[in-house]
Amino acid sequence: MNYKIVKLYDFCLNPNICMLKPIVLEGRNYSLVFETKRMYVVPCTVTRLINRICASLGTTLDAALDYSNSIFKDAHIKTNKDEIMIKLPIVLSVINQSYILFPTASPRKKHAAWILWQNFRGHSIIGQHEIRLHFKNDVFIDEQISFTTLSRQQYYSSILYFRHMDDMLTNYQNPLQMLFNARSDLFLVP
Image (cartoon, rainbow, N blue to C red; front, side, top):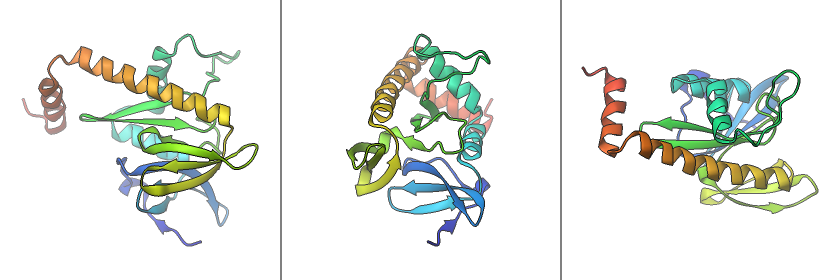
């Protein structure tokens, strides 16, 4: 199948994204991006793409995972290497729009795909470890993920979303103040 290629630095996080999925084309790793109305590839791994998205928003994947861990501090198990074992969703914010992305496997694994929680609408079980994911605008994607993992990720994503919104409202009593602060940072207004 021929895919349109979008360069890494031309890719932007947007509300139409459904899923970022790893794919190998001609022996090279790419990220297959499913949006509500189109599909294309970015010539890099999904992990690199997530890192690029985080960097463009002034954060890192590690910082986003740390924030998630601060919310779920009692819900993870650590190994001897102090590595977090649970597959936590992350929240990324652009001005007053928050995006919740959850991984289908450990975030550092090559086969991990990332799903935008806000566009996820449900699923159908089509095999023991294969599920058809349903997204906004009748987008359907078959993915190898267990029902248990998917259910847990949906649950964690909803908690993360509402806790993040609560944090935003607590830190910014006046929503206009939040918008003004974002704009001043963005345009360097004194």
